[in-house]
Length: 195
Image (cartoon, rainbow, N blue to C red; front, side):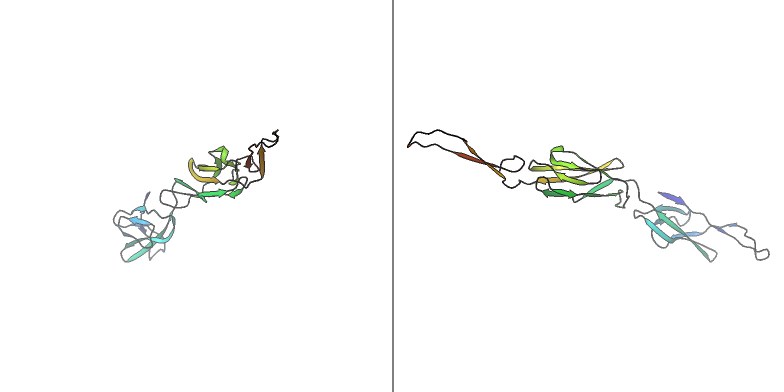
């Protein structure tokens, strides 16, 4: 982004009135914020957002004056979720947050809304409170944060829950005296997933 600065000299020793006089100053940047054409006064903002107090300087006829520049962040181009991945047990919870920035890394602080890209990974509120689903697995990009039309994602891994039930099969069997029969035991977690 560019802006053009102008300068004028004023003052009258007899009337003490302000009488602008057009001058051709030499322009310079003293405290960062961008660059300026020393002859034309055309200022080009740098990539770092912030307030640069008295950074523009105009010098003419031995007189110097300054101006302050405020460089604002650009449009949101990046949404970053924190943490970018989480590993939980089924039903576990994780609070996600997100930051937004422009193409130069300046914070834009635009509003963020969370959602799920993969419903089986769990559920999440618009504010980022996540609850893991019941099916173990790895879910890349399952959590989505959207701000100003830009999206960021985070990965979710759901670990196998602990053994909570054991089933023996067959449940009932009739066997002749002296004969043998085989049994099988299978385990599952509280959600019915095999362990």
